[in-house]
Image 1: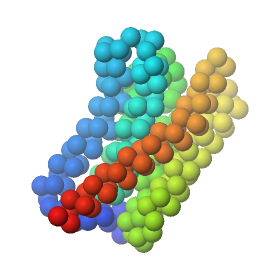
Image 2: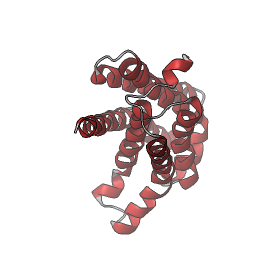
Image 3: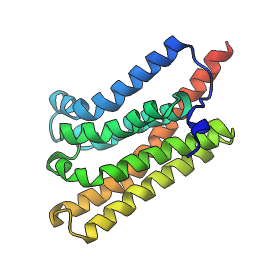
Length: 201
């Protein structure tokens, strides 16, 4: 891992802007997985389409936070915090995957590594060598999903997960990850373009 890559961002922010951004991203990475699922249940009925698809909503927001981290934050410590926080919050909250949340302790290293891969590849390809954003996002998304899905399937072979949960978890660790990381990358691109236009005014 190149330390210089981790210290780069798409633009130089003032110290105040950097602190505000860091706090907002950290709060998003922690509070969204921890509380948003429960908030949606309180607002909508348990069987509503919004609650039943809360994984997609929460996952997309978290992935957006990861993408913005890749583009705007500098330093290993800040990045490591954002990379690790969502999975811990999800397990603590138990709202996204319900009763299977505690089983995801087994997946934490893979989720951390997948999240880091997404952040690092966007930072390396887009921020460091200034290639096309979508090339960077595509590489990050595919590597993230490949890591998480591969580790899940290895653990599945060893019978870590109860048979009745395997199908749902396989979807959550595969297609759901692909969809939410893609949506997060698209939202992240919108934020990036907005900030770029704003800085030119």
